[in-house]
Every structure is written in structure tokens, then in C-alpha cells.
Amino acid sequence: MAHATITKGRHSELLAQTALLANGWNVAEPIAPEAFDLVARAPGSTEWQRIQIKSARVRDDRNGEIVCYTRKNNGKVYDQDDCDLFIAVLNSDVYMFANRNISEYWVTAANIEEKWTKLEIGIEHLKGAVV
Image 1: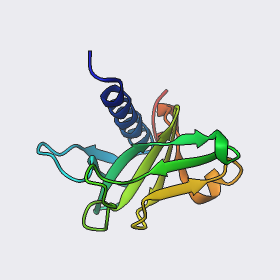
Image 2: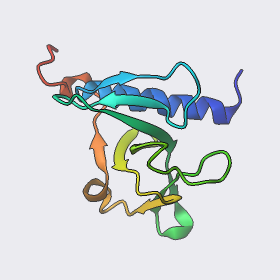
Image 3: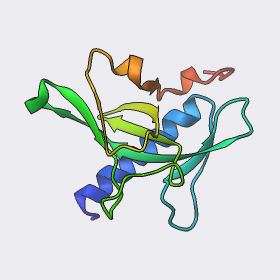
Image 4: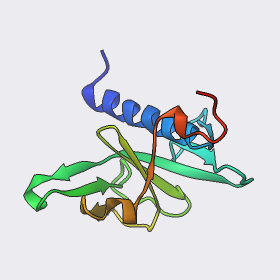
């Protein structure tokens, strides 16, 4: 069985892909290792966005604030050459936000949907889907 960290990371990646597809995005994974986890194209767009996927967590020691740590394995911050967007997965919720070249993204539960874009994971959200 894979290490728990690898399993959790892959689970987050699959949830992110599911959410993007359910919201009408085209999604592709690189064959060779890259700084980003996938590329995706928004509905109606011709531009591919490089996306890095991270697991977010609630910090009980910080009044329930939600944090997404966004450092690479070498400890450096993802810059614009690495990725355009981040997707943070918190339990089964999927949120997307722009890369601002910082190492931590914090948000309160009260304003998470103002600061980050929530992506629904149900296929019923796909425009034109037959359910």
C-alpha cells in the first residue's frame, strides 16, 4: 500500500480533476514530471492554465482558519513560471485561486467563498449535462 501522504495527495488530485470536469473544464496531466500537477482549459477558453493541487487544512490553533501551504519539495515558493493557479482540497470541497507567489494562503471559513472559487464536484453542475 502507498504511503498515506502519497495516497492523500493523489486523492486530492482526483477530486480536483473531477471538480474541473464537472465545471466544464478540459483537463490533461503531464507525462513527465513538472512543477504543476495538471493543465486545464476553462469552458470557452483556448488558453491552458497550469495548476498545482494542494491539500488544505483547518488550523484549530488559529480560530479555525483554513491554510493551504504552497511550497515546492525544495522549500521554494511556486512562482509564475511554475503554475498559474492553485487548487486546494479541504476534505471533499475543492477551491481554486490564483498563484500570488506566496508560501501560504490563509482564509477564514466565513469568507472562503469570497476569496477562493469553489468548484462543485457533482456532474449535475456541468452545463448541458443530461442527468
